[in-house]
Image (cartoon, rainbow, N blue to C red):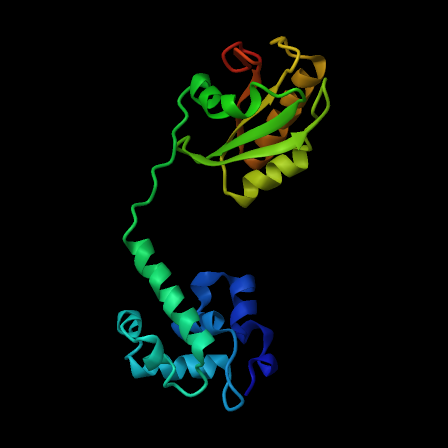
Length: 225
C-alpha cells in the first residue's frame, strides 16, 4: 500500500509534524530519510525490510557501504547516499560536546552580547535575549528595525518568539543613535507593557537596555523595571 493511502497520522512526515519526532518508529524515520519507496512497496515497507536485515540496529546499518545499500531492491544511489549521510551526521553528533550556553548574571553581561550589534548603528533596532530558568541564553534575535528616532517592537512577536523557544526570561534592548541614554516616554511605556504581558505567560522581563556607541543604561540597575 502506498503511503499516500494511509491515514494521515500514519504517514511518517505528517506524523512527525503532528506528534513530534519522538512519536516515530525507527522505520518511519528511515522512510523519511529515503523519501520514497518503489513500485512494489512504500518507503515505510522498504525501511522495515532494510532494518530487519540488520536486526533493527543503527550501528550495524551504518557499517553497510553504498554498494551494499544499493543491493536492496528499491534503493538506488540517491537513497543509499541519503541513508549513509543521515547515519554519518548521527555519528558526528555523538562525538561532539554540547556547547555550553552563555549565562547572564548582570546587565553588563547582556551589554557585552549586544554591544557589537547595536552600538554603531545610525538607525534604531530592537533586540531580544531569550533565556531559560537558569538565565542561560537560548536565543539572541533582532525583532525590529526602525528609523532614526524610534523602533517599535510588536509585543506579540516578542512573546511568540519566547514561547517558540520555551524561554522563561527576556532581556530586551534597543539603541539610541543620538547618543542619549535617557529613556523616552515610549521606551518607558513599551517596557511596562512587555512586563505586564509577561506576567500573564509567566515569562519574566529581566531588563531593558538602551545602548549607545560608548555606553548603556539598564532599566533594572536604575530601578525602572
